Image (cartoon, rainbow, N blue to C red; front, side, top):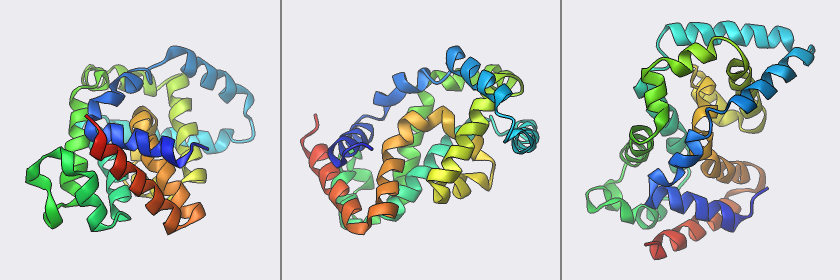
Length: 216
């Protein structure tokens, strides 16, 4: 598991400069990874029935427009809102100070902060181009990317059930793997809160605040 300092540095970097993770997100559309998941899917007979059920849900979600741009943004928002939900108000003031005076003070809301970060990431990501062009949708309906989406959804359910079920309401759990590089440090911090308690989580927030304060 990452150290508190490492998690804090990654969170601070995304808050100060959300486009810093764009390069990692671009790497998500990886054919070698998809082929690996496809091969594993063939030999993983124990979970085949469950994965077929999930594939049906995935197909329905795509047909009902899950790959529209706003759903990509909303997936990021939901996870960031969950992170903000557990952050004391005084910590938000310090941590989000560099995002502009218009969102400072006790009037800060989860949705304003999350929407701003999510939109910046989405607007500058090549995934938006792929979504608009139907590339991701066509690939998700067949082959290794579908397996990858399903396996990552199942992994999220096992490791971070609170986030999984928040996303699962609108089938956004299938989109999670596409934005995981941007969301991973926030999810890790929440996992530490769940497993090690509120004190550990506050320690991470203290480090984030320090990193943000001295970031340029």
